[in-house]
Amino acid sequence: MTTGVILAGGHSRRFADGDKALARLAGRPLIVHVAETLAASCDALLISCRASQQQPLREALGSHGYDPTVVVDEAVVGPLGGIRDGLHKADTLWSYVVGCDFPGIDTQTLEALDGETDAEAVLFASSGRTQPLCGRYRTEPTAVAADNLLSADCRRVTTLVSELSVEVRPGEHQPFAVDTRLKNVNTRADLDSLSVDGRE
Image (cartoon, rainbow, N blue to C red; front, side):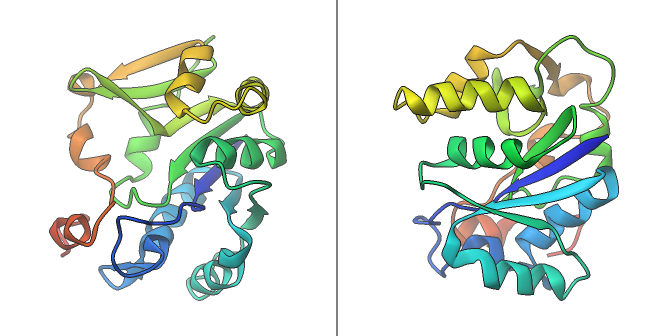
């Protein structure tokens, strides 16, 4: 069994029009694109967000038939805090952790992270870099590692990855373009240039 954790608690400072989780692509909010994929691949769905986001995110997801568990970030300390809070609520051995601004992922993307492994995290690598905000994590050790880092006043997700045993899935070995699937939305220009499955 696997939990899907969507990270939605960012302040979208580089996005000109409010909360990017609610920005529309192909007629649906970005977070709905991600929820659709995770709901098809996971046994449970969690959203990690700030308190002020609860109602609008519930409404957006509910209007498309999704009723996830909403986890309010204990402290606004970036994506590492969202990972920590979301994984503490997950009760499965493994969790997918995906940012709300990765609308290009689909079930094939997540399936490419599956499989037997002794690692604590499975991540894609492309152009020499791993992408920690779209990955498969062993729930308990990742939550513990995130706790320890935040207790030491470290907020870097890259440091979390360095604390875990990681299995890397090279992008060039995948039957799809990893860079395209993992293109995230930080600005309005990113959104305007993005297509999902050929839809503008």
